Length: 631
Image (cartoon, rainbow, N blue to C red; front, side, top):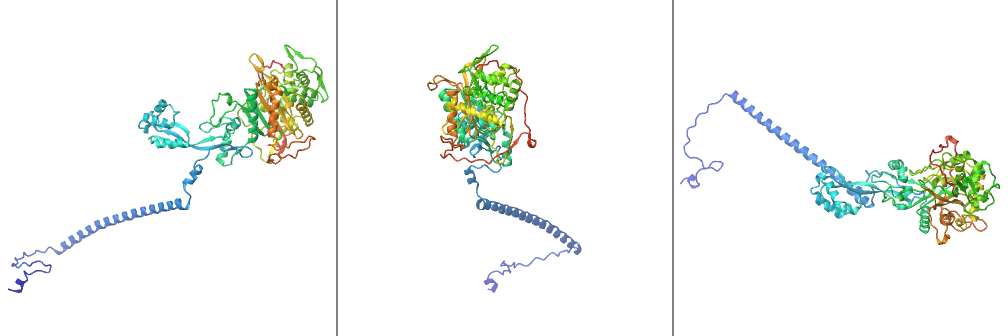
């Protein structure tokens, strides 16, 4: 056995058995022309190389671009997450504090009293609306919604959710718990809109002064309407809250005193005003009945009526103070002069009498002291119709009061202005003014004869207050002395306050009705001020149709109801305003009073100075003639 037989068949280099069979003769190759083979080979190789390279380059570029894009996106996202989570405060604390989001611009500025107490502000709320096209089952949605909002009418709600519109309001101004519960219902097609709602922390206390806004945050009464544009501009420019002249402490006392008087004397309404006679600032203004501005009632409701500025009334005998000032200023009578009040005055079919006749000649102070209609009528006749109209215009009794409120009444005056009208206006009948106008007139007598515009906005320290002198200063001092005697010895004795020198005048007027004056429907008032040794504050209290009580011995005139109400008011607000009581000898009492931040002295400018001009208006034309000269 040969070596090849022992180890198996012969194998080639790759381990395959060699074919030991004799090789078949090979067919000889026919060589192609060299030039042609070279050209075909080169062309095929170039074509294959170009396609592969182009595909590889395109794919590689796309992969690199995609990888770079995702890398940049992840880097940006990582940076944002680090900034939000580590470098800056999260959103939850801001929401927990209740602060509005930066992109939400407030519609209106806050309103505060003179000491910074908040009277009106904004609250961010959610409102519910629906896209009916996306509500799958209107009936089911309505049933579920009424579990949270049971006051909604189911029939109307189904109709709203079944309509063709793409937007319908369901409920404005939701409470946070209502929003949460509605959101938990999971009803498709319902959405929430963030809105602002105006809130009034003091509620009824400032309802007629501040007013309120409607559902769209537009002013609808009081300062909210009168200064609507101002409040929006202050919010847009970030100028801070609107600071009013009100002192919420005085406002609270005034409302409490008037409410107690309404209950005691069973009146249908009451009005009160406290004004700083030096600069015209209204410290308190109340009209009862009032309303809750957070949930205003029907505009036709009597509680919406602002008696202090919109109501006009014949104010009765408080006008005798103005008649006396006119007569003394015109020089038709002196302080020691007077008129015969022995017999009633008969003019045409009218008779003017005194309520408590003295039946003798009365001096000017006695006419005030005894509130003589006869004496006041004769004093007015001495002034005359022309001068009486002029003085009425100076006091501001013939044109609407100027105040920042839209609710301003139009005063009523006779036309033509005849002799009988001159006499009746002399003692407070025949012309009707608003309580605010009466207060403005009394401020003239309190501050030395200067007419100062009334305002509900606090003056800034150093601000110039324009005023016009319309009555001689000496005359006003004489009238103030007469008003002090009225409180100490006359019809307003019950307005006295121990430790304070009070002056004023009472007024009892019969209200006009369809058939003439209603003798048992009275409007009683006290108009005066304090402290009279250093006059500053004007006080008005008016009660509408008070009833007699056992304490008043059957009387319902102002001396028995309006005067004691005013006395209680002064007793309670004097310490708040920083007015120190006096000792029996007239010296200041060291008794401590509540701290009061005294404003810097204001600068005054007379009308006509530095391009300041007074504005007057013609006498209102009216076909209504006051024909009743009742006492």
